[in-house]
Length: 321
Image (cartoon, rainbow, N blue to C red; front, side, top):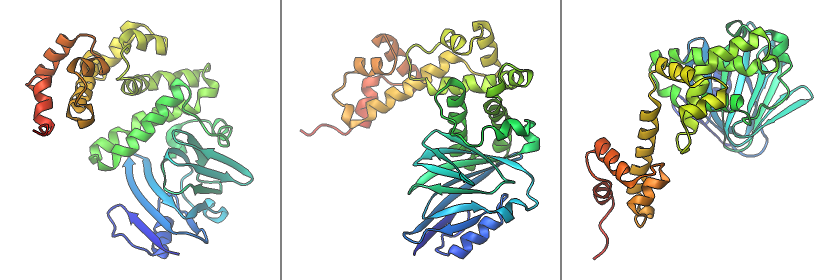
């Protein structure tokens, strides 16, 4: 059985024992049980978001286990929030099994035994959050440990998108940027956990604190939609348009500028794409959300300094003579 072990800032190795030692030294010590067939492949990246520890791993060829003995160690009790990017993952707690597909979120705690199993090449991101930092009743958490949380509602989709997006960018962020991510991560996880008690005081408080982050994630997920507007945001979150403007202003977001920039970037990519070389400029404008060709041309020139047709000529190879 071979192994490829690529851990952030460490030389690549093929030593299973090296990986096992590193796993025992992690913030939540774990054991590795390789599968008898195939190759063990592990590629991991980490980041600390204040008190939150983030581990992103693409792996296959073995189970990750928090044994009963390890679950009794002196690790501060933490909630593990795992979101799948690619492939599938299984969370096994005793006789209970939870299957996670891309976008799904699974929950488990560090002070109970568990086993994690993954499809070949699966990529998942796990946030270790100290329970005392969450401030959520343990019984409320316990009731949600044995079912996958699907991104099929506005709230769950926003949390899933934030966790995945943050995991992709956080490892390369500065320490200051990483620290700033702690608050929105905590707010959104609290919101996720308090969904069953949304009509209580704790649920309403969690919803209020996370609202700005949820609106921002909603915007970024729908920038390509032509009907995205302050009105559509107000409807989606059941708040007034005035309140939407207030929230965006506090975040330093100008919705019109953000939408226009996203659409112009999409148009620039289309104009650079050889497979789109026969697409007219007007069609590019329409596909990127601009209803008026002239308005698109003016906005494109203001942003990039040249006309869309000149941008295309600059970036595409000349046609054969």
